[in-house]
Length: 321
Image 1: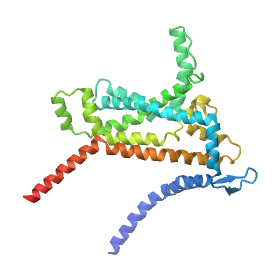
Image 2: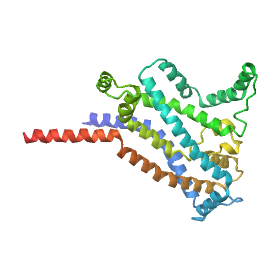
Image 3: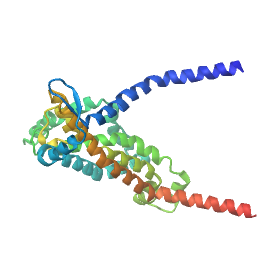
C-alpha cells in the first residue's frame, strides 16, 4: 500500500512539475493582463502622479465620441472588416482547392505543398523582409530590364499599399491551411472515395458533395477563429511599416498597437482598454452565433444524427427480438 501511494505521489509530482511553469505564465500573462485591462476600462490615470481613479462608464462614453470623430479609427474599423471579407472570399475557397489538390496527390502537388508551406517554416520576419525586397527592389528591376517599364512601389504608393498587405495576408494564410485541411481530408473513409470513383464522380463533385461535408468541423473551426480575430489581428502591417504605417493600411489591431507603443504617458491606456472591451462585445455574440449556425446546419452533423438514429433503431429492433 505504501509503495502504491509513493508511486502515485511521484507521478503527480512529475505532472505538476511539468505544468506549474506554463500555468504560472498563463495566470500572469493571460488572466492577469486581461483582468487588469478590464479594470482599466473603468479607471482614469493621472498624467503627473500615475494614480488610478475609478470613473466607471466615462471611458465608454469617450469611446463612442472617438468612434464618431476620429477618422483614423473609422478607417481602421472599415479596413479590419474589408481585410476579413476579402481574405475569406478569396483565400478560403483557394485554401480548400489547393488542399484538395495536395490531398489527391495530383501533378506537382508536392511542389505546391512546398511553396505554400515555406512561410510556416521560415521566420515570419525573414519572410516579410524578403517580400519587401522583392516588391521594392526585385520587381522594379525585373520590369525595367525585360520590359523597359517602370512600375510603382507597391509598398510606398498609397494607392496600392492596402492591396499589397491583403495579398501578403492571403499568401501567408495558405501555410497553415495546407497543414490542417489535407490532414482532415485524410480522415474521409477510403471506401467512400473508391465507391465515388467507380461511379465516375469527377474532381469538383467529389470535393463539393463528399469531401467538404465530411471535413465541415475543421472548416467551421477556421471560420470561427477568423471571425473572432477581426478586430485584434494586426496582420503584416506592423512587420512592414513598424509604427509609421500609411493611414490607408491601418486596422483596429494596428491602431491600438500604435497608440499603446507611441504614447509617452499611460493616460491613454484606459481608453484603449475600453476600446478592446467594446470590440469584444461586438464580436463575441457574432462569433458564437456563427458557430452555432454552422454546427447546426453542418452536413457532418446531419450525417451523424442519421447514423445515431439508425444505431438506436437497430438497438430497439434487437431488444424487441
